[in-house]
Length: 233
Image 1 (tube, rainbow, N blue to C red):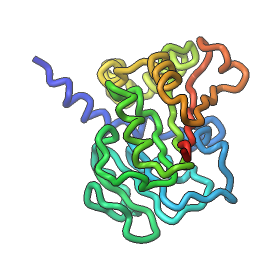
Image 2 (cartoon, rainbow, N blue to C red):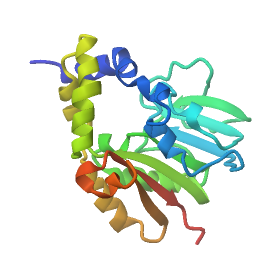
Image 3 (cartoon, rainbow, N blue to C red):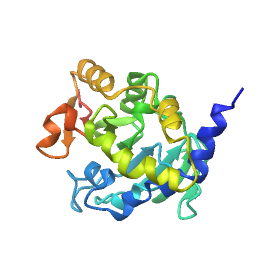
C-alpha cells in the first residue's frame, strides 16, 4: 500500500517552491499581490498573523506598516530572517517572527491580532467555518481578515495547471501533481463561498474576484479574495 502522506510531504519539501516560485517574479499577476491590493503604505496594523505561510513567500508583498508580523504554518518555516517563537507565544517585541500553528486550533488569546492573512488555505481544510471562527476569535474588533480562495472549478485554473504548474512539476520529475491536489484541496470553491456568505452576516464580508471583469463569470474566475472586517459590536 502506497504511503500517500509521504507524497504530500515530498511535494512541499522538494517541489512546491520550485513549481510556484514564479509567483514572486510575476508580480503583476501574483495572487499575493492581489491579496494586498486594498492596502497602501499609509495603512497600519500593529500585529499581523499569517496562517499557512509556507516558506514566507507572502510577506514581501505586504505594503502597509506594522509592529509585529507572525508567519505560521503546520510545517517548519525555514526562513532565517524570521525569529522563532514557541507555539502559542505572542511576539514579545516589534519585528518578524515564525511559529508552528494549526490554523483550525489557534492557541493565541482572543483579540490578539489586528490582521489575519491566509493564502490558499481554506481549500485545504475539511471545516472552513471552524477555521474562520478561530481567525475571528483571535482578531481584534475592527480588524481585517484577507484570504485567498482558488477556484479549482474554473477554466482558467485548469488551463494554468496544464500550461504552467502541472507542466513545471513534471519537468522537475514530480509526476504526482494531480494526486497532491486531490489529497490537499479537499473543500471546493463554491462550498467555501456559500458557507462564508451564509455564516458571517454580522461582519463586513466581501469577495474580490479575479481576473477583473472576466472574474464575474464563475467559470472564468481564477480565484477570489475573501475580505472580512470584524464587527466592533
